Length: 368
Ligand code: PLP
Ligand code: COI
Image (cartoon, rainbow, N blue to C red; front, side, top):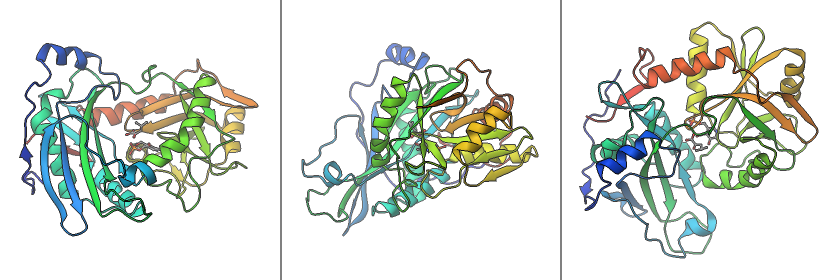
């Protein structure tokens, strides 16, 4: 396990909360944290301006942001975010999983959305700083964590359409249990044939709010059909599968090959990359290539596709039991979770929670 960047290069000015969450309240929250509902006592923020670059690193009590009604983000959605987790190990130490990969993706998203790039050291320093003040919010119950949500938005008050000259970076955190109410049990997925989330040359590969806004009406449709997530195709004519609203998708073939869509309009998931690496380490073949809807649909019917799973920071690795479209259904909501899916989930979480050797050097300690 490596311990890079132990010394933050930024000096954060700290203003501490004068009434932090009482311990008994906090213990109750941490027992069953849900997802994204309760937030820690503090946030970290950092300003950027065209003239001054990154400046004014600080920690302050969690609370509303002050935003001019003309702030560009409210009108033109110039905004990006990330999602990663802090895990408590059995000895009480606090670790994150491949945060440099999140920092690099945050920089790629920034370039696509004409926002300034936050240096990796600042990204990591902000995580360490939040853990320094709110470390007691990292839960220790099985499969729980503290979800870290870095984001950056255009705060310049200006209604002309051009990249903003004033930007803010902010980090908030929220204790997290399972994203799906069903936990690691199989979920049903709804195929959207009417909507896509991203197009060629668009913003699909960036982690930006607009992609999620574009997914909501389809996600609503998924709920109406009893499904937990929506599957998007590359276009409404719909030949190639892309990803789910908030996670990547992987199919497992009868011969043990793992197949996942390769497309420049989906988010390059760090969970997916890691799980596929673990599968390759075990000798499985991995194919990153265009994957058609027919390959999935017909493959389940013929027995060629034996497992499917969703993967992402929030979802971890979640088996897909059923794929439903307007005129077809394959699989069953009561399907047994795939064996390989469950064992990859276990291997990944064992590394994240410090129960297995970190042979790829993925873990970074945050509480030092
Ligand atoms: N795809 C989308 C649209 C997502 O929102 C996410 C979650 O962040 C992912 C894929 C998976 O990415 P990661 O594994 O890095 O969390
Ligand atoms: C994440 O997994 O970090 C995401 O941003 C996806 C969202 C469903 C919470």
